[in-house]
Image 1 (cartoon, rainbow, N blue to C red):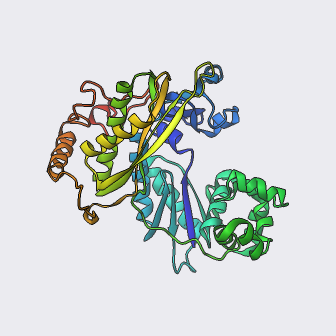
Image 2 (cartoon, rainbow, N blue to C red):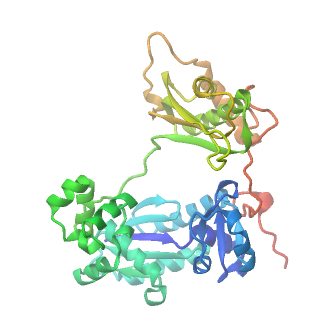
Amino acid sequence: MYALADCNNFYASCERVFRPELNGKPVVVLSNNDGCVIARSNEAKTLGVPMGAPAFKYEKLFRANGIAVFSSNYALYGDMSNRVMTILGEMSPEIEVYSIDEAFLRFRNCDYMELEQHGNTMRKRVLDSTGIPVSIGFAPTKALAKVANRIAKKFPERTSGVYVIDNDEKREKALRWLPIDDVWGIGRRYAKKLRYCGVDTAFDFTQKTDAWVKKNFSVVGLRLKHDLEGKATLAMEAAKEKKNIATTRSFEKMYTEFDELKERVVTFAVTCAEKLRKQQSCCNSVMVFIHTNGFKSDMPQYSRNVVVKLPFPTNSGIELARFATRGLAYIFRQGYHYKKAGVIVMDLIPENERQMTLFEKPNLKHLSLMKAVDKLNAALGQQKIKLASQHLGRTWKMRQEKLSPRYTTRLNEVMTIHC
């Protein structure tokens, strides 16, 4: 059997752990730079706050209904996620962390296991240890575990947060209830196509022939169909290194000069290099992109990206900054107001598998230099040691006017309890 453990309204729940007076009250969490709503408590959903709602358009609704608004506190959310996943990992020998708030678990030889009881034990342990509520769905396949979890979360008063699909009757009833748009792996475009073909529910999808599904949705769609039929075809996946690493930001103001953009792009390239070294990888190409503010319809619009193929694999911040600057010079155009830029390193390989070239090769001195930089930044604080082409007195700071303390990762922000 598979289980999917999913934290309920995770970001909002993390905020409530340290603000228990907000339990039962509406809470929303905003995206980077306090742009739009990316997480809502059930109470906020009931009040009509949609996902992705621009914060400035809903300020009156927030104030009128006493909705608690928070800036994204990724340091807190990441640490709380690690705690939840560690506890879940102790309750099953096989775990696949699917996202920051979801994990698949596999239970073998569980014919005599009371799954519902075990699920309640898992929920209680996570809640008691972290304060985060979770919903758990059990089923013979991963896709059905997703369905079971959705039922557990949708009907908490009936399921107590745990639902088990362990026979064909439950499976068919669940699939007839689930709209095709909400099936795991069915995107908006495929859902539209399926509805056009008369497929409105997950059950309708399973009634199509294998040949029809394979022809219209490839072998990936066929595997999903088999999973929904109770035939396990989607296996547990081991943790993988990232295939691409990106650092992108919207600016606090619009930039018009090349040197202003260059400083940002160099900083993004250096950050990507740090991430590469952290996972002991090198990249073979780097993408640089820039674009103007699409919301400013009264201004000329421009967006462009370029991929720079590197002559050798590297994770040196100095070398990546040089190549990224070269890419920026190629796509930059004078006369535009730029609002966002980014650097993406691609074609990653393990650090110990670098293939050198005959005519161009990396500066070997950078290996020890980057190690020293990483060590100093770890000891003194992030971005204390910089390249000369970076702004020495500037650290990137998002607009986070409603940021809660990083209770679990910063000693100077730990809660003080008065007895």
